[in-house]
Image (cartoon, rainbow, N blue to C red; front, side, top):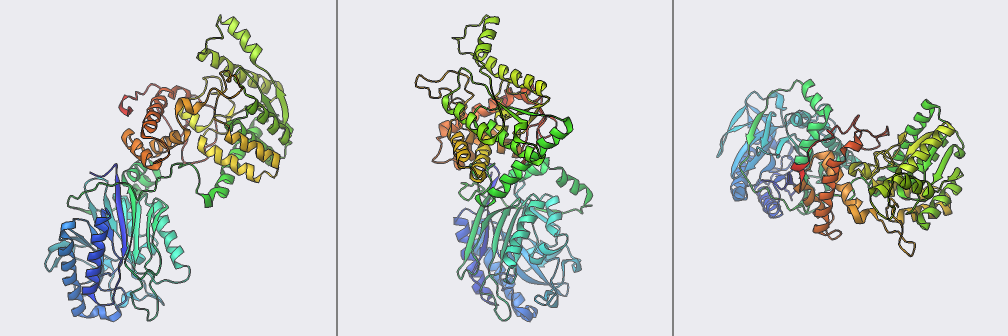
Amino acid sequence: MSTYGYYRLAAATPRVKVADVAFNADEMVKAMREAAKGGAHAVLFPELSLTGASCGDLFFQPHLQQAALRSLAHFAAETARLNVPAVLGLPLFVEEGLYNVAAVVQGGHVLGLVPKSFLPNNRGDYERRQFRPAADLSLSEVELPGFGVVPIGTDLVFTDRGDFTFGIEIGADLWSVVPPSSMLAMQGARVIFNPGAAPALAGSSSYCKGLVAQQSARCLAAYVYASAAVGESTQDVVFGGQSVIADNGRIAAEGSMFARETQIIYADIDLQRLGAARSSEGTFNDSRNAAGLLPVRRITLAKFDARCDLSYACLPSRPFIPAPEDQKTRCEEILNTQAAALAKRVEHTHARSLVIGISGGLDSTLALMVCVRACRMLNLPNTTILAVTMPGFGTTGRTYNNAVAMMKLLGVTFKEVNIKESCLLQFQDLDFDPSLRTSTYENVQARQRTSILMNLANKTGGMVVGTGDLSEIALGWSTYNGDHMSMYGVNCSVPKTLIRCLLSYEAAHCGDARLAETIQDVIDTPVSPELLPPADDGSMEQKTEDILGPYDLHDFFLYHFIKYGAEPTKLRVLAQVAFAGEFSEALIGRTLETFLRRFFQQQFKRSCVPDGPKVGSIALSPRGDWRMPTDACGELWKP
């Protein structure tokens, strides 16, 4: 059994000598042993790796062809006890023609042979001089010396009868209009191995890496590419030994170019996750139906130890936050998406004002920034925004001062409504003792604020802009018909961790040092609903993350639970890897329990949330991304 669907894939670019098959086979055996020691579950070698890819017309020599077969047998015998599948290349003479094939070797056996489909024939490559394309082959099996009858064809898919199912295309097959990997993926291959031999030309490595990443994304697959290395002939071109492993559009591992020694790269890929993505991705399944797929032959791999320690897994602890090199572009996209959505709603409703409650916390600050952008898009003055601060029993000086400072610096219409007296009157009407710090004490305040905002919107002909974020929606951390409700929720698909990132971006680019300082202090302020009175020294007493657990953990769980359907034990293990040294296993376990319990209990709030824009790959709108019965039982998901 694999470790929660993870498999360690390896791409090896060994030292090579042109036409020295014995040397090449020995180097590949060494690489296999090293890869197996490194925990690899499958290893890819370059195209024509047994002979070298640059043999030219020497490929026609029966002596070289037979030597390649002998070296294949040597490699199989020397790696048999490793029991790790290997994909390697060699020339094969069959049906009076020569084919460029990839052999799958495991446990001393050759399980199958895949011929290259598309042979480049241009100024730099002239493979058709020596080889024939796969379409010319009429046989489905060949007699291979020392191995008996072996399946051959482009219709082979190899599987462990679990998550690990792979197909093979060779070199320039990837460059074709419809790569064979597209069909193999639709036939269940979650991994594509490509043994290549591409010359290293200016710009070619980045182009190839882009193709690998794109094809892995199109196929919702892992894609492993290994190209011929510098030991190949340099008579007219140079081979750089490029190696890349991609995971559904993301580069998971990349080797160094022009390495003069054997190089192996590894990536731990969650193939279970890819299967989950395929099951929920409509375009993938539609493609299957439209492609007119031909049958494939499934070759069963021998059982092997598929345990994985995840040391080569790419597990960002904050999966919603863009990579540093992408942050500027992504933050602009997200903020503009939110603002454009709000601007459209303002136009449609002919709203004369944007009414928003400003607490001095993360969510309302982001929503305020979005309102300012929307006004800019509509050529409306910032005074269109009616920003309301509503101090209550738990409001601290820090949040109040930040709220007021932001509103004044942005030039919005400012209004302050102290809710203490009106809440005390309501406590009196309810015959409630306000010394009791129960949910009634807290929720009366939240609903009072929402009532004020709604009524102000009616008075000014405007709309109430909601501030609640995706993390709060997932956990139900809002007062039903209180801050749970608005007329348009601009933050509804933005999780708490991403809000901090967006506000940091706004602070860095707002062009106002005082505003930037205020926004940074909002970011640094502990998250709190501020519904319970502060401590005697005026500091914040009620801190959300002390109650729920860190939002960093909640957002991590949300990402893997919603996007890939990770089950509770897997969520816990992935979090332990991603947050190693940051959060204790005990805290991770408690927070996971809270996340799953609240996620199921609080669906009733999500079933009636206001409209709001989706800005990323995850949202919880009951009208779109997440349709779950309010009374679904969460017993099965107890960690």
